[in-house]
Length: 373
Image (tube, rainbow, N blue to C red; front, side, top):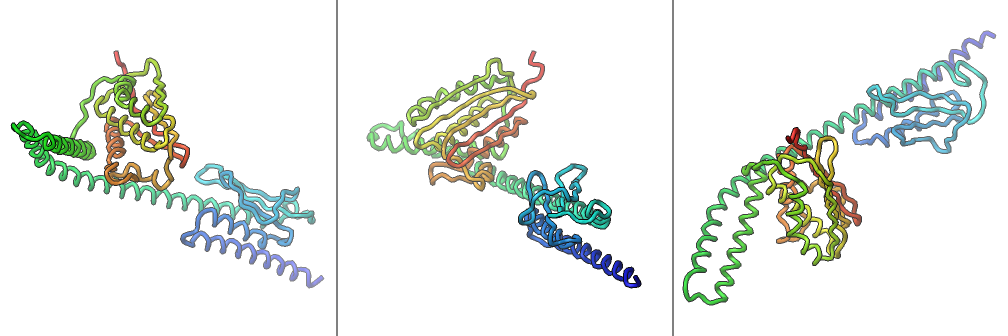
């Protein structure tokens, strides 16, 4: 009888040591850099069984946002303890501990009162870890956005300077080529070569215009625009190219589409860029769908193809100036950045979804004209 209190105190102390060991190990996991949330949860769930009174029959699992992290051979039983994981006042999942067989009833079924405190503490620490990691991820994403904005500003300044420096010599090249072409007695072969100089100069001038649009040096000339008409006019010059490339062009325009305030020339430039990109993504032919719709006081333009698609790493960079996957001479890496700049300047958004070997989908949303009457 005299040994009973001692044995009871020793048992309680042993259980307390196990609990503290579990919580300390979780704290160490939280402080360890480089671990993903998945890795942390997988480690936490393995720390749980040794902290309970009957570790040999204890299993545990953590469910978070639909993902399940469990000890080997976990299976639900009638003998379980469970508590919610709440992050920023939002229920995200739970922690659950089960016994594989029946044990004598204690404070909470077969579980000790201290084990209730422990499972609650594990859930709170798990929620804290998730909250902190998500804050770190948001911070990293924000920093990347700031770096991206800084790069865009720097490239914009560079583009503006280059464009202005090149405009004058290009104008001279083009002007003198046209003068030489008018001189009498020039052989036909020379005239053809001069024509190539003119074509190259005009192409270079178009690139400069794109640079100036990207650098926001050419403000849009906005008016009331029917987006459907812009698309019909723009596709008129591309239909033959689609047919020649074996591409089935499907144009599905919503009737009575609300008007928008926009620069029709710039919207046509965006459309051409997206369609040409789609054509280049379908070298063996395919389907190209261009459609419009209206919802939530916005007008949408969709350009969808079933071409080669893009990997996630490429998708992250397509709006970066001068980034291109095309061969030298086939692309400047300015088409999509310019399109992005135009749509942003119009108060709209441009988003992209793509799956390798399945295709790409661009969606442009622009605010519709309010009170058109």
